[in-house]
Length: 207
Ligand code: PRP
Ligand code: URA
Image 1: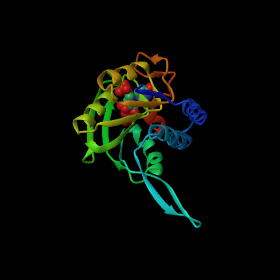
Image 2 (image 1 turned 90 degrees about the vertical axis):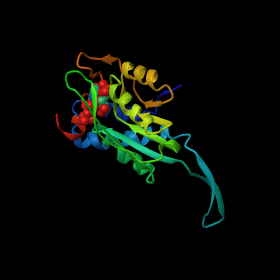
Image 3 (image 1 turned 30 degrees about the horizontal axis):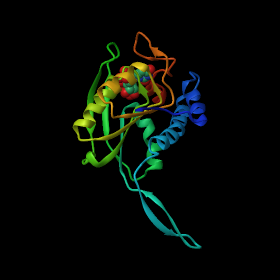
Image 4 (image 1 turned 60 degrees about the horizontal axis):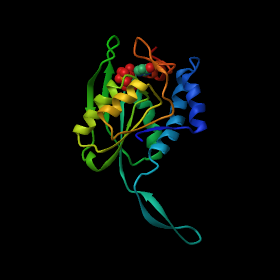
């Protein structure tokens, strides 16, 4: 299964605050961090780890530490709002950036920026973009990551549309998608319904 619908009640609690049109940017930003802490935990359940031993005040304790090289790639601009939560959990993660902008009238995404770390072949790549609508932006970002060598890619989004999920699965069947919600449909302007509106505008107060 490449689509993981996250059912955690705290995720859905946070999602309702994000969906609420009354939620102002200050709260929207904070809740974006909360929801991403939980989504990132789901998306990294099977991260490679190595056995280690530490000395507690009483005795040696055996356990595991994450051994994977994790690269987080926010899709600008809205994906930036999800970054701090992931770096809080995985402070050693490397960060790449991909800038994509949907044309307001055609909804076709074009790339305006990219800076990726080297050696993605061996990394676990977490691509973060809150909205998966037509899937055009996600497929463009995933194409770019694949060409750069990324093999293990997991996409975290906050709301998805069936059209976007289908497009990603068609072009990148190996990519795992983590989302709490696959909404009903896209409207005539290619916005997700019910969705939560324009994520970037709500995050940054540019409505
Ligand atoms: C939003 C969102 C995705 C894209 C999804 O970004 O963050 O990147 O739209 O739509 P799609 O699946 O139809 O491509 P937008 O282009 O609005 O840019 P922004 O993040 O700068 O606001
Ligand atoms: N981008 C958004 O921010 N929201 C949508 O519903 C679709 C694309």
